Each structure stands twice: as structure tokens, then as C-alpha cells.
Image (cartoon, rainbow, N blue to C red; front, top):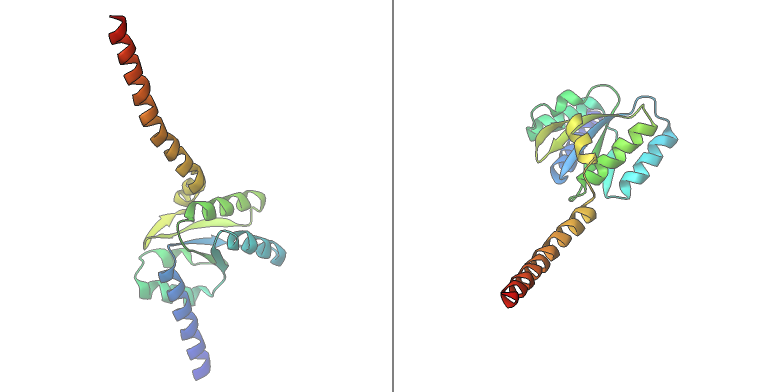
Length: 165
């Protein structure tokens, strides 16, 4: 009996450590997905630096309560999996989950936690619709390049206007 308890405590510590180390977590329901579909999803998420794991809800709830994230344990009912996200790829992970749920309706996004604050499924879906980090950086770079170019055009027009007068 003692070994069972220590194994459970180890799992709670593992979940707590993963949540604390992650920049965000997304909780999904996977009822009805096949093992092959779950493996496919795990592979896609692993490609962007995320980990998709299934834990017993009771043990995961203990971990979230120890961390002190209010309301996250309410999402841990039924067959759930936790996606642990490292780094700043939250939008990419949300997009993968949203796209996968379109082709596999058995995958349901429930919500999650970002910066130790509980977020809704709608929040995750909005994140999924954001452009990728690379696209936003290129748009920002284009904007920064446009400022001096537009200033040069304005100065050129002002000089031409002064010369014409």
C-alpha cells in the first residue's frame, strides 16, 4: 500500500513540475480518439515543442491545487489530456489542437492556463487564429522598414515642392 501511495505522490509531483515549468497548458477531452489518432496528435505537438500527456484526473487535480491555479481543476473531468507548452509557441500549439479538432470532432478543447491564469476554450481558439510568430515578426519588420522609407518620400516631396516654388 505504501508503494502505491508513493507512486501516486510521484505522479502528482511530476504533473506539478511540468505545469510549473510550462509557459502554458491546454486541457482537452479525447473521448473517442483511437490510439493511432492520439499518437498522430502527439507527433504534431512534439514538432512544435509541446507534450501531450494523459494523467488520472484526481492526481492532476491534486497537482493544480498545490500550485494554486484556481479553477483549472474544474476542467479535469472525464477523459482529459494535458498539453504542456514550452516557450512562446502557444499560438502554434493552439492552432494544431484547433485544426485537429476540426478533422477529429472527438477532440474537444476545454481551456487551460496561461501565466497561472485559467483561460477558456474560446481564448485558446482565438489564439489559434493569430498569425504565426514568424508572420507577425515579418509584418513588424515591414512596418519598421516602411517608416524611414515613407519619411524619405515625404522629405523628397517637400524638397521638390520647395524647388518648384
